[in-house]
Amino acid sequence: MSVTQQVLAEELAESAEAPSFLRTVDRRDVHRWAVSEVFLTGVARTPEGGYTAFAQLPPVHHYFTDQVLPQDTPDSILIMECCRQAATFIAHRGLSVPRDSAFHVTDWSLELTGRSRPAGTGRPGELTMLVTVVPSQVRGGVVRAARFVLELLVDGRPAGRCDVSARYSPAAEAEIVRRYHRRTAPPWSSALPPAPAGVPVPAGDVGRRDRANVVLADVRRLFRGVAARIAPPLDHGTHFDHPQDHYPAMILLEAARQAAVLARSPGARVTGYRSRFLRFAELDAPVRVAAAPRDDREVAVRFRQGGTLVSEIVVAAEEPAR
Image (cartoon, rainbow, N blue to C red; front, side):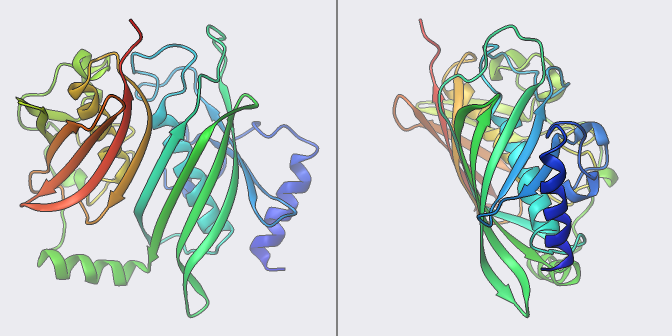
């Protein structure tokens, strides 16, 4: 048994005696600077070789609970963030991926099933994630890619499933690759003007209350769907909890959610995503967004930069009941 496996075995033993939602994990293991942005509260190795991860869903958060949603519906973006934190923690502590590695999500899907919280509780939700991990690439004894399957329960009730695949690169190798594709070093978000250019979408049009949480600007209504540009504030406390040199997958997912809501209606209920991330979305060139309904349940969202496809995200967005 490796040292990492021994630590996780000890955590499993402790979880049998202590609450699973007692305290958050080390913020460095989930790539956060602010402890207030950490929702993962523990990970335990299971006898079958998988993991059980726990996260507390905050009752109030400036970003994750800002959506106009029924009280008994978990926020899909919050669930995705908790799954991201669980997969990141397991990559570091379970698969021994070095902390200074560059993480690149390649595929990510979520399906939320039903409404899993009783309305009006006012208490933090408890998310349990039953995680299966399959390393898909190992080089020189080091895991370079893995797939995570997470079965989700909110307050003990089945809530859906999340699948995420990621690649891991040593920091020096990742920098060489980025410079090769860009020909220049990418700028950091902290070195760019924080206020986005363009005309932001009204918050209510994308199901938000706070305009600081809007990530789209310069929207155009098309014959079928909408077009826009990614424009989040670069000093946003959650999106840019720490400096970034590209738009992370979580921002693209939020942009896809907002574009899908625009293509549907402000009250649309988003219950899932199927995503492919093909290239880095750079900060110093416009990222164009196009969203078009596929049918009554899905909206296809595509991101292009300089004419090149960056990402494709299909959003499950249901019209509100009338």
